[in-house]
Image 1 (cartoon, rainbow, N blue to C red):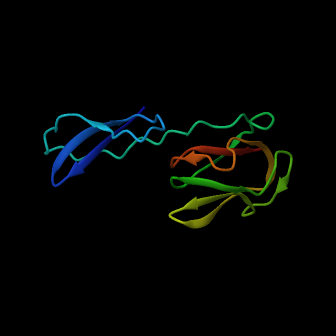
Image 2 (spheres, rainbow, N blue to C red):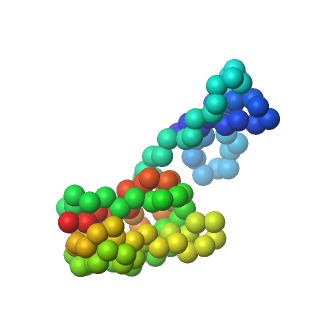
Length: 126
């Protein structure tokens, strides 16, 4: 289950969403006081596929929520800063997630088709 705070027309709601695949509507709690600004949802990694090898020290994270469209580099691949590692589909656009520095891909923590949240760990480098 995921919890979010949503503001609609100045009313702040705490919403809990349960993923069950049956298309059920989310349940909403009673409105909170509107004086407090709504906090952004806390980014949590989606359920990740088993890592390909040991985790590296450099984390490659999703910049926005989306769907894993393609994996460009496998574990063990040498990459340069700026090389694409994973392609995410964000708002119907293919967006590359690139290496932040030179290194070797230590693990790929997602699979094609996975939905990921902003900040989700996608891969690691050594």
